[in-house]
Length: 206
Image (cartoon, rainbow, N blue to C red; front, side, top):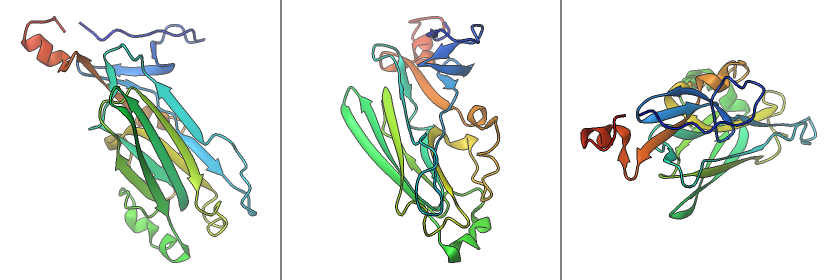
């Protein structure tokens, strides 16, 4: 039995949607949906030049879906950036954060960190388990005033860790297919059991 898909009214009516985001793939235990990447850019004075710096996604509270805490990570990219993460589950509200920084001296070495989120140019951290709703807010320590010559924007998203490989030139972030390549992964469970576990117990034919 495939996981039920919640459809939403959308111009691409032939595509399935869940929580307002396009479903990219379905397996017996997980669903991958399109990601949301938020960004915050600054001018030389530190004033913001865009306002897409917050995002949230809510899954049906009564549904079988949760955001995978083993596959997804909160990721922040930039030289003067921090993201605050709030997650909501039946256990209550859980929070975490991640910060990424560079300086004139470290930016010259940042190529050495390609592929790794070490806190220099890129930060990754775990998300709490069992979340049904999450919110991410992106901010800056000094509005990029000290790093503006080489880094004008910060980025943040929650998504599949293995789908993202940090590139110091940020070429993958500017790729229009980036949100497909780094999806949000949802776990699908029947009660406290995955679909595979339920199948082994003959609860359903997944």
